[in-house]
Image (spheres, rainbow, N blue to C red):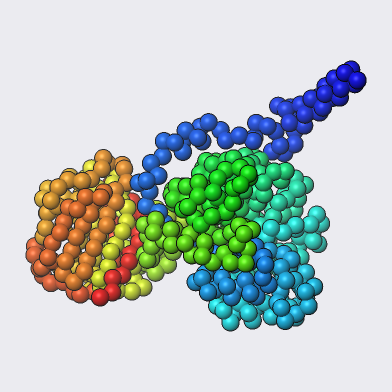
Length: 497
């Protein structure tokens, strides 16, 4: 008996070595890919997440949260929470007014698809994503899913492909311009570990990425922030969850911020990556399957509390992952180049003004980052430009917050140009990003530079400024071609009295 047991043990050991050892050739399946690289862990440990100004992300509801209800009921409950987008999953009963066999999926008859559109329109809602769905193995099967997504305006299909599916899926992604997101169900799912998905994505179209589920990673004792860092640049969707503990024993989903996922750090990491997808809520606490609203509301309040840009409007628009200058016009010589992937503006030539033309602003907080290429880089942020610039006359009727490290007093970075000097120097070394938070309410103008208040001034005509308006346009100055200035993360929050 011992001999037979030894033979069985050796055979099992040999099998494990073949399947999971260093020589395993399965795509993404080796044991080496089931750990977070030490360099990623070090990057995370060395990042000061507390200093990150967290961006506001759009929110969607994964309808699995309301798996105890019909799809139409899930829409109504989601809308009641103030959420406009859902991620639908295949198989959810469509409506209590229809037979139980009628479910939401890509095989729906046209008559039911029409009812879905009508329901969405009545609630002013959209389906942002669809999944997790098996797209099938044949082109006919896959096209049915893509056609369905196109009909409903769905931009993301969440799935778990087999290795042989990728060539065909990539071709369809390019044809339909619809993104694919690989989901990470927990083990024994193939994609339970982020490195497996990352390896599968090598060389594929950038529109094929990952649907990251923070809760499933926690089930596998993986830290969400480390997994997100590893997947930088390939995140398409995020199923955001918080859990009471790692692993599965006695652990359960809880409201965001009350578990061990460290949701604030997760949001900070997504901000650093400039993630442009949805935070998709998927609440799976089985004790609250019929009443998840209290936990969701508590979690949304936590997210709102830690979001630095809550209530702000981003002035550089973004569509399908690319930044655009729509709404901006340029007056005078030179121009600003925009990197569509990073959203960084770079000045060229001068002297001119890039101004946001969609609306005038009265009382506001303007928040942005800038970087000087040289110590004598010269630029500025113009406030309340009263009329459409057609000459240089605007400089006499609006205030400029100066950017010029080589200047002195009323001409130094942080000054109200030619009018009010900064109380202290607070600029960072040339080549590093600086942060402006400019508040203009009535005639009270305050400027914070890198977290330090450098100006707190009752505005009045002074220096070059002959008068100033109660409202006007926002503008960014390009000064010369030798020392460009860079801008990014331009946000504004209007203050109503």
